[in-house]
Image (cartoon, rainbow, N blue to C red):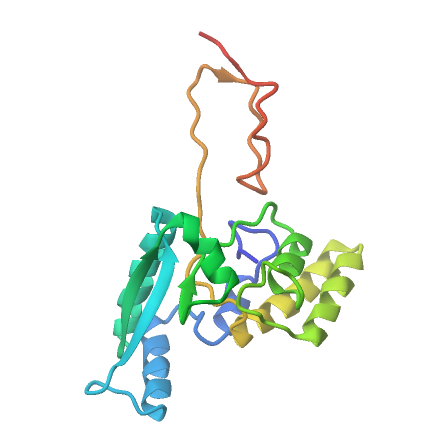
Length: 207
């Protein structure tokens, strides 16, 4: 889940910082990553070649380039492989990649939509194939919890485990904005999704 202030359900900063790799001390994270690479036999004189596949549009390509640059700091020589949109979803559906950088556009900021669609064992949108039946049981528990504060704590428990397991490693949480001309009237901007409120049946132009 996207952390606050962008998201309502995500881990607060101190909780997120406790997950390996998600702390704010970038140098410490890099040092820990290099230590892992050294244990695997890599180092300054032996790099790991890797191909990072991604879709050929900017919201995919830009994070992939940033990601590849960060990997080079831990002796991974990542090559960004740009895939045409017409072939992209077939490719990730077949899992025909070593590393695939994909965006996950959630329709609404709610755990039910995110957890079941992207992390349930049998979901077709669970591209990495992550499957943890114990965590999946908690999907139902949080969904049935009527108290928002209690539900949030269960969601945090799930979120922390998904991040720690590398179920779908997060490169970034995207932020976007809506810009309107002053003569656009009747549009109600949504606060929990960039996909809602786009029918425009009540929108009119005052000019």
